[in-house]
Image (cartoon, rainbow, N blue to C red; front, side):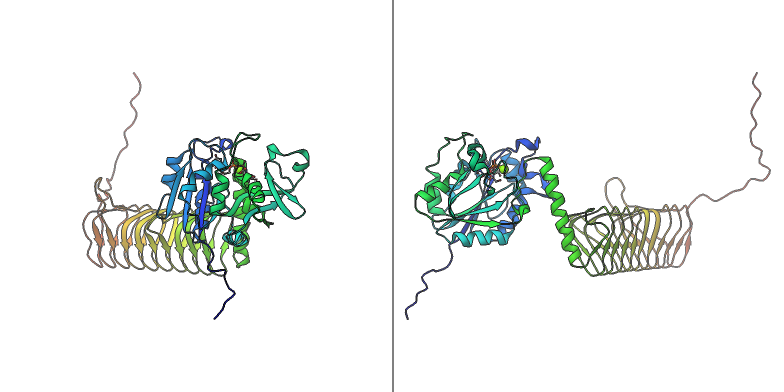
Length: 469
Ligand code: UD1
Ligand code: MG
């Protein structure tokens, strides 16, 4: 049967990320692309987005601080090409050329443009369609510093860098974003012909536009309206500005899903924050890594919460610090934590557990209904249900060399100011007198007191001061 569909499958996409520049204006010893936005290096945002495109190959051009950049992001499926010295964006992509197959579409991204959306890139690749040069462009009220998109009628003729532009060209408000998609074979032939005869003495990638026009290849501009997607970072001020804009968007998205934020301008999400219904978050909270807040959770002001799952109805009061780094933290249903509490990795609180002010919990499970309300340390411990852990009491889990576990069975009452020297087990229902130092297991149901006996001396006379000679 005859077919008129000669298009075939779309060509594979190979991504090139330019990340060799120095970032002089950051005034930092850290390479620019390793500065963080929303808790992640700038280039990691770009890599995440690139990954979601399912590209065939991803090549990162490194140069300034190459060792640090490669160590920070290296992983399976990623190739590096070094650019030494850094002679411009065209020279950067030239370094990747030997790694690029002729049959693909090359998508050029910048390591310092972190918030580009995958959908935008898909649309750009579709506009390229394996046969056109597609440029991502945007209209800016203030186009200063950017490459201008020069058109004749509707047709794109060239990109002229700000420093090379005439006064008339500088009035153009459509600018090049630094992102393009091009058929690989053609791109490689243009790269081979670049020169540095321009105001900056650099090899400009943008000169390929004029070459494409001369070669009779169609050049298309895919224009977007959202400036955040193409915002590049050159200075600490721009980084801070983009961080705020990005955080505000995150806050708006949370509110659209019903999360009640006391002030959307005072929230920082450095990772993923997943919320159920009727979640309330007070001001100045920072969320890091993956955090899950179930239905009805309330977070007080000034909390830092990282790598943690908080179950339905739990309340985290002001100034609480939770960090489940690597192993996680869980807070059970209707538990109450804080103010001024600290939950460290491996803290797992059951339903209705209360953790109060200046209480630290690490690598310990507290079963339903247990309480440590004031000034305590519970580390490397398994605590049963309905235990009351008195003020000032601690588990002495570390003998200076090894860590040991403390087991506290259900319904134990630990008085105030006790030291539980691990390894030790407190039997179910036992009671520990205040001020005890417990070094041996306590049988179930008993009272244990381990401290000096109280003695009262009748008729005790205080010493009197001798008169001075
Ligand atoms: C570039 C574009 C400009 C566009 C702007 C958008 C060129 C010549 N100009 O200008 O048209 O409006 O981006 O932000 O491309 N890099 C290297 N090696 C180098 C130089 C740069 O890897 O030798 C990397 C940088 O690390 C950065 C990216 O390329 O990630 C862009 O470089 P940058 O110097 O910021 O280019 P612009 O002058 O902003
Ligand atoms: Mg730039």
